[in-house]
View 1 (cartoon, rainbow, N blue to C red):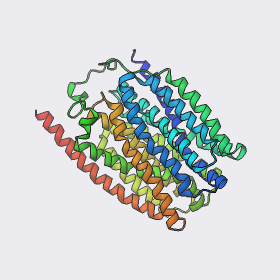
View 2: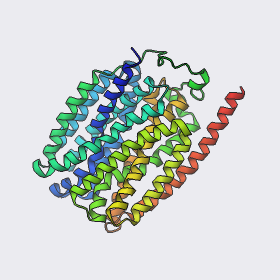
View 3: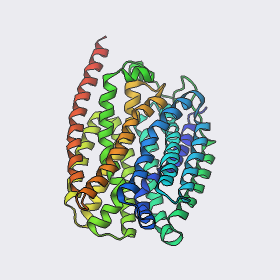
Length: 408
């Protein structure tokens, strides 16, 4: 396959990620669902938590199939599952039905598609891993930019359930159509004109299988870093609209605009930090992102007007996007590109853990404290301090290993 065609595959991957990235617009749906059915905030937010918690497990299965069979059939099936889950969420009568449709089916669909769009892109762009991973992950963040305001306009006119129906049909058709563009590079393929030294293309320790990766102490440090990085972002993404309405006093429509800003920052962070990691190093970029998240959580904690609120959520979202843009490259750097589909799926369980902890932490703290999120913000600031320390430690380990490899 010609080198130029990898850009077509990249565009198709970004488009599919935009569709599944609509999950990030959840907070626009949450309050209308609570008003319609009388559910509590923890009950409703659990649907979003469940959705994102299931994603990594679907990625592991889909990643293994994609590494062996290619991405086309896997993304097609994933698109059908995702569209079905969102469509059926529009026919629920109970909270359990919402968990099974939006939560379980939606999460399986997202993980199935995402394993292919990210893993396959890394294989096509060995020369630009940070940029390509960031662009692909950007699509996931753009889902909220596009679909949060669309949902905010549809919900008052057709209702929250009919909006789910409409989105489900659109996403199924769009992802299935894009799946026919997908293909994997041939073994040994490299971009035309790219002739790096063997040392520049080889992962530390060579290509590793999932079982070999799990025996590496380094994997667990990276897992901790990923989990910490995602907790704050997923907490804010899941509650940004309620925080804006209840803490700042925004209308649902203005809060939806803020969610669009959040989505832009989320998407932009994936490209910006992915590209920066190619230039300044993965671990320098990651350490900076933890610091930015901590500062923005403090700003959000004291915010009482629109501007600091938007600065806070956008700074957090930009760093969160960076983790999703950089971590596929970190996986390939440390464990090789051969099994990137399943290996990144295993690492992505850190995202699933964060998806459970982040939104639930905010919901539980809010209920227990009489309606404020402040303690949740402070807890996550502490976690990001730990993230900086772990990142500096693993940076030293990696540098020491590189020196040993060079000496050998």
